Length: 432
Ligand SMILES: *Cc1c(COP(=O)(O)O)cnc(C)c1O
Image 1: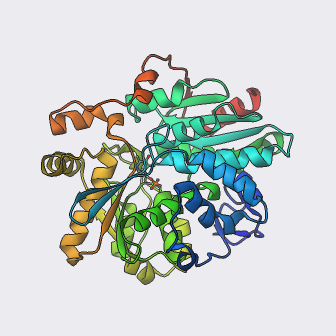
Image 2: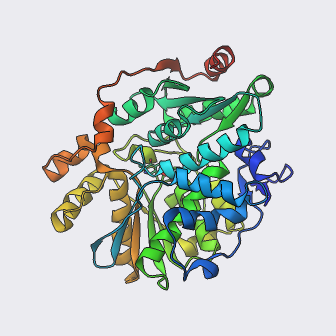
């Protein structure tokens, strides 16, 4: 399989090249040249989660990774449960938060770390993985790469914009992980990372790779759980997926799954007031904006990178996009209200991100009357956000042991102004 750039100004590359480049040299994002229609072959077989991941990911990497190595990679990467929980008639929650950092980004980060580790065994040069995070990406990536030889991870996160637990997850690992606390927004962090990748001098001197949702190795494994959910529910039904979205990588995984033949009625794209994509669906005009801080902070993105991929997958045709994606936008007050009401009605505790997704599913049903099964992607464990959830449900949230352990560790972070030159200097002067 070869991977082309959404900007089309560069030659297609192998999986390994796309994995290590992150962003294509022309500034585009990589997508696979073919999307095999795999659903018919797998819909009637029962698989474990890693077994399903193997079948779906194999066509994308099989020229470069042997079956036995891929089996080992998926077994190590996806070594936790992926429950589908029915909370009301026809409404399901796909719990993607049972990995080590309690957020769905573990799926992508762990697969990417394992594939990079595999290819790096054949190389010698040290690699710097550079990642901007609005909260959860950084800790998922850091956990995925912790202790991997020959890789240092440098994380940029916006000062004061991540939750206390997220900050602990980002800054307490040590070893080959460094966290930079940037005096700016997530978009500023993302721009600094983009600058580093475009800087010739830097690219000559150090080997840089990205771990943001722009990396194709993060996108592909995010298709797998859409298949998993449909298989758990009813493999003949056409399912509605509601995806709480920020940078739209999770949704793009779903779009790929649909192109692989998965029966999907519609994707509900649910956002907080950072609503540039729902606005784009409505008006046909895309305006990037600065991000606004909300309770669902991992979705505070004002210029989502993956929109370039989505447009490309639909041939730049807004009508086609509109026929498969429906956008809904929710304020923080509405998010809290959904957390409260859902808890009262079903006893289920939603985190603020998943609550945005659940509100989207409810509004979609109201707008269309659809009675097909609906699946909300639950992107984070509620215990990560006690500050906003506990008052909403008037109860304490039980804290999983993994989080408790974090609270005793020391924070280790490097403050940095919102200046790309400072990042460059840091990257050039600090090695493992
Ligand atoms: C990253 C994240 C999102 C948004 O996912 P995208 O792929 O960027 O759209 C939603 N919820 C949580 C908890 C996240 O960490």
